[in-house]
Length: 172
Image 1 (tube, rainbow, N blue to C red):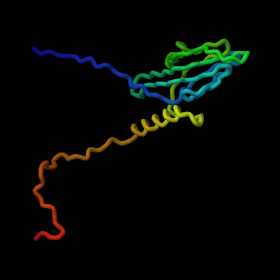
Image 2 (tube, rainbow, N blue to C red):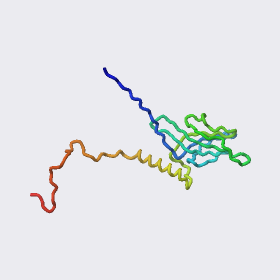
Image 3 (cartoon, helix red, strand yellow):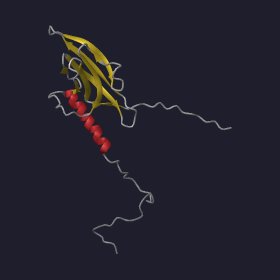
């Protein structure tokens, strides 16, 4: 009697941390839609809103797309006070789930990126570390696989029977 054992392997999705979050903002009065990049822990102002991503994760290219970012959004009121209107996760694949809905502006996550055409803020150590880590990961993916340096098939293993040649005493 044969027993077949089925192993349950949990598929662990690899989360890639990215230094840049890409957002879409819409001004409902003008109908203007703007795409903008924000480095992690930096703040970008869109209209009366200040958008600050804390982390931005994406899945690897070989997996189902899953992109999320933990974001804080503040509103600058007419009396110049800053009021937090959103703190939480945004999901690029479900923009309506946790988008910021303001009377004038809407903001949602479009994606996460390793690079941006926007210059990195000077002195931003967190973004510099994240960018360096992303560059290092990209190098590892592009590097050719290491070639084995050990014995090859057909090589004899064990002590050598040949004597090394002595330069002072040439062989007969």
